[in-house]
Image 1 (tube, helix red, strand yellow):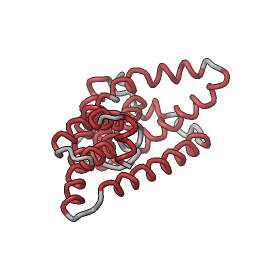
Image 2: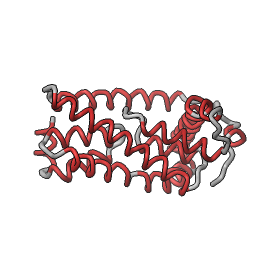
Image 3: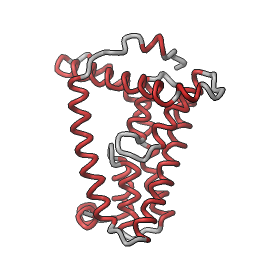
Length: 217
């Protein structure tokens, strides 16, 4: 796997950054790839973190405008609405599953609850919990830029540290990181297919989300 990617792009530094841009693979796959081709863990982390974090900016500023544009085009209107419904549901689920308990610990501010929910979501080092989805959730939680960027950036950092430690552990016990990369790619592909299926079947279960999740944007 690593040999194929290296030969395809021709530069391991560029390969690492490009992989960190890719949805589902993002930081996790990029760190595993970089360490497997011989980069030190700090360099692997730095390149992967930089690339995956930069993705936040276009997603934050362009997601809703692109969806609004798609809704004006007959052929894409249905898809855009389903994507909106999917991320609205995801935002609602994030608040319910990850922030309700936090409220009992004295975090009373709605904005802080949303920020905490996004941070926890992004910090989990699994496919579908990275910067792409985390930023989309922040957008549909109507977080302002200054409130969205911090939890995404910090959550991505924590996820990167955990994956870096996992990569070091795999190397220490003799696990071939190429196999780990295969597993990550396979898992990402499966989750991508499942996500498309879920989006295509999604219904607007959160018509009241704007009432439950007050906009501060």
